[in-house]
Length: 142
Image 1 (cartoon, rainbow, N blue to C red):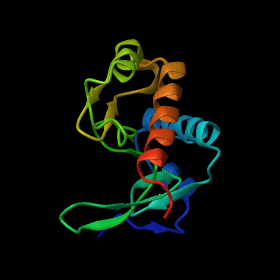
Image 2 (cartoon, rainbow, N blue to C red; image 1 turned 90 degrees about the vertical axis):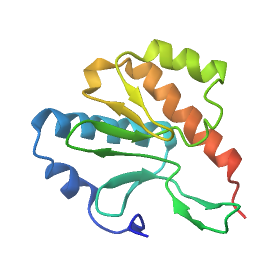
Image 3 (cartoon, helix red, strand yellow; image 1 turned 30 degrees about the horizontal axis):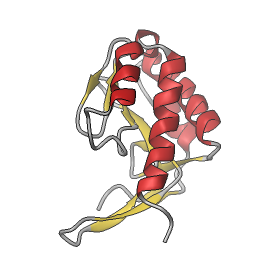
């Protein structure tokens, strides 16, 4: 498994982001996630900045650790790992927040933003907090 928490420098990683706008937005998301979660950022693998930690175990027997929320400044977009607790995509509170967010794309566990100015940061803060708290509830410390 490549996505393991490590002691690499979050600041060095973000300073190495080539795209100036993505680098600036990444530092803003770093601050936002730190404020919302109250957690210190840690690198997970070579390219994910994560906050908090939980242990998961699937019915298949596969298990591991992951950040409660996190992000990565990918080449095509800012990838936010904030949908871990939203297993039911029909959740009305979740859908309401997404409708208010702005311009984004999603996959099963990720929220993709081209640039931070495309979204309402207050709504984004709520999504981050809901995901952080919801994932903690789904995966309580053993």
